[in-house]
Length: 255
Ligand code: SAH
Image 1 (spheres, helix red, strand yellow):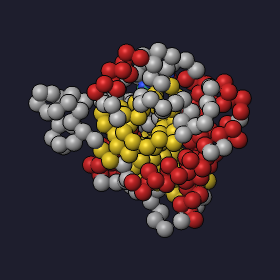
Image 2 (tube, protein in one colour; image 1 turned 135 degrees about the horizontal axis):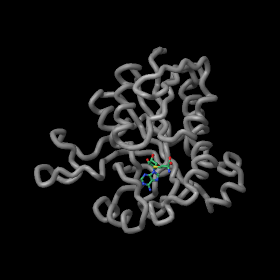
Image 3 (cartoon, helix red, strand yellow; image 1 turned 90 degrees about the vertical axis):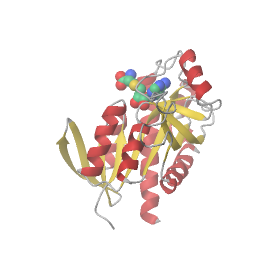
């Protein structure tokens, strides 16, 4: 087994806090204002870190993980706003492709294309995404057991689903129906919007390393997107993330 670590990156502090107890023999390393927590989970070398919010924070974090820590693969976890119909609060989205919705160098390059790469959509590693989607499905199949029926009720979560497809990222919290309608119009196949994934995708493509993005839907990117946001991360998203990451790593060991 390779002793080089798998990187697991959290956008939010509560999520990292939920993952840290999984780590055996933690060895924190501080670099560029970040604490990189090295250790093992179920015998596998892992490095956990908080990226912070937005594309630049995510880019710095990903580049350090791949270059300084020689991470063999990277999984980004966090929450996102649901865009496509049927992508509801409490669902999980495992990205298949990522795109920067605020990239626009037109008319020099087509809208959304990252200049000089010829690409607007970056593919995740299919095997990694498959494994995370399978772990997500196992975990949310019994969401009531996972987070408690009182929490399901308070966020009106009925039957959570796992979705796979396009996730879009930009340096903007999408806080209104008007803003999410505008995104749906130009990117009708986008399942969800967040602020980091596509940046990580570009860095991992540059390094040629596998990556995946796992997001719990915290809001519908509408006028109430900010309501209960912190409580949702604490009571639902961080519980999902911890369970899914643990299930995924446990199954990897057996595989
Ligand atoms: N209030 C939070 C800030 C959240 S920023 C705090 O104080 O920490 C939003 C975070 O959740 C980002 O990491 C982003 O990736 C994700 N996100 C969730 N819903 C989103 C939405 N509607 N638009 C954009 N990003 C969203």
